[in-house]
Length: 420
Image (cartoon, rainbow, N blue to C red; front, side, top):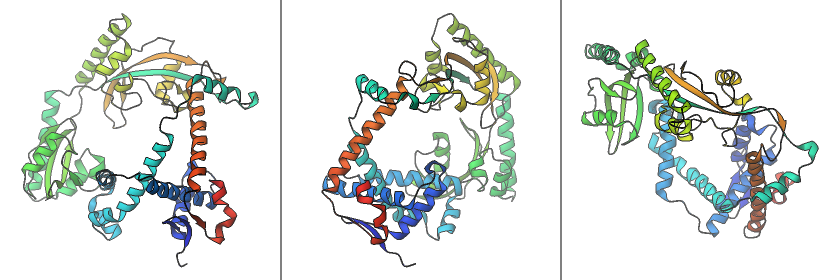
C-alpha cells in the first residue's frame, strides 16, 4: 500500500505507516488489552496536538538534552546487542542511526515537557481526597489483599585476599593464553562473569568518558588500540581489558571479568556483622531505617538503603501487597509478628552471589475493602490522577481551538477530534 497522511495537526502529520506500526506495538503490549486502531490514532493525534501547542507556547528542548537521551538509548542497545550487530542489522553506522532517531527523540521529549507543564502544581487537599472517596459507590469500592511494610538490611560478604588472589591468577592465565594466540572473544564467551558482554565476546561498544568505573576507564584510556591490560581490580571483580578504538571522548573496548568467590568465612563475617547490628536495633541504639541507610549494601529503590530498606508498593508507599512480594520474603514475613527482626539469613542474589540480610516487619494488614484510614495513600493517588485527567481534558479543549486538525475520511468514524 502506498503511504498516505491520515491526520494533520497544524504542521505535524500522522502517516498510515506510523499508525500501523503504533497499532502493532500496542497489540503486542499486554498492558494495553484489546486496544482499537481508533484509540491508537487518537493517541498519535494527542501527541501531535501537544507538539503543535508547544510550538505556539515556545516550549523547546535543548540540544544537549536530546543528545544525552540519544546517547543513553544507544548505549543501552549497544550493551545488549553489541555495536557490530546493530550496524549489520540496520545497515548503517551508529552515528547514522542516531541522526535518524534525533527528530523522534526530540518530539518525545517535547511531549514529556508539555505533559509536565500541564500537570505542574496540581495537588489534592485532604478534603478533596475525602470527597473523591465518598463519591465512590459503596458496592464499587476496591478490595485490597493483605499488605505488609517489610524492610531489609543486606550485607555482601567482603571477599578475602586469598579469594582475590585466586581470581587474579585465573585472569592472568587467560591473558597468557591470549598472548599465545588464543582468541580473546572466544575466551570471553567461555570464562567472563559479565553475561551482558560475554555473549558478544566481551565487547562493550562505544561509550563516553565517565560511563564505566574509574579503575576500568583509567586502564582502558592509557592503552593504544589493540593493547591489552594486566588484571585490573574494581568493585565488580577483576577485568582483563583490550582497547579497540578511540574517537575523541568516546572509546570502544572489550573485557573479561572474573568475580572472586566468597568463602564460608567471608559469609560468616557478614552474618556476625548483621547479628551485632540487629542487637543494636533491638536495644534502641539505632533505628532499623537509619541502620539500613548507613550499612545496607542493597542500593535498589525498592528494598534499598535510600528507602530505609523498605520494599515499595505499586503506589510508592512502604506497604506492599503480599501478592507482589518476593515469595521467600513473603513466607518469612508470614511467620513474623509486628516489630520482629529476623536473625541473619543467607540467600542468593539475582546474580547468583551469596549475601546476608535481616528482615524487619513493621506492619501487616488483613484483606479488606478500601477505607480512608488504611488506604489513604492509594486513595490520594487515585484522586490526584482523576484531577490531573480533568485538567488535561480542559487543556485539550482549549488547545483544540488554537490548532488545525484534519482526519482522513477513512477514519472519520473514529471521531478523534471529539474524543480528545
